[in-house]
Length: 195
Ligand code: SF4
Ligand code: SF4
Image (cartoon, rainbow, N blue to C red):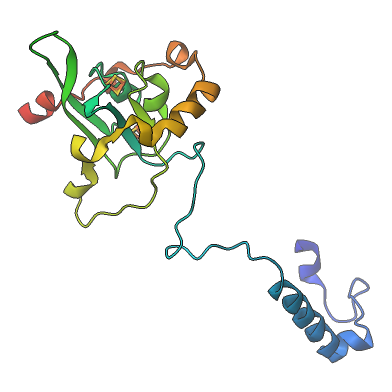
């Protein structure tokens, strides 16, 4: 109310208080009645953290790697790492002996960098990385914030609601239109280890 800031006593714009306004008590009682009325209404607040919050599959919590019977779907193509805006993903690809399939020997996400944008999930051609409903985690040390495969892998059944959600809502053209920044292609752990 910038206009009213300059009002001085006796100004024409000065609001005249009624008798009940001058007494204050009716206004205080009105406020108390308002509070009393809301005391008996259904509560909309949640007693977090004692009561965990149930979140739907549309929620973007921490990204996880999808595993099927203990084996990751990821083929270490590196697209997620290149799409990741804060450069949170690093990986080291390797090949299996028998079928010569690629897999991430190491896969890391720095959770202090992750901004939960979901770009990694959008570009992944294998539906191998998805956003989970997990939002409640903490670290005591910066090194603890770098999650490896031991913390990232989740069985498909655990993230099935998100996979179903993506089947309906995912933008199928995202990978075609996303402007991959060549500068982002610096993520292999081998490169990092050599530095
Ligand atoms: S959600 Fe976004 S910031 Fe986090 S790892 Fe995926 S692409 Fe990177
Ligand atoms: S985009 Fe998917 S398949 Fe490719 S490295 Fe990332 S998680 Fe693995």
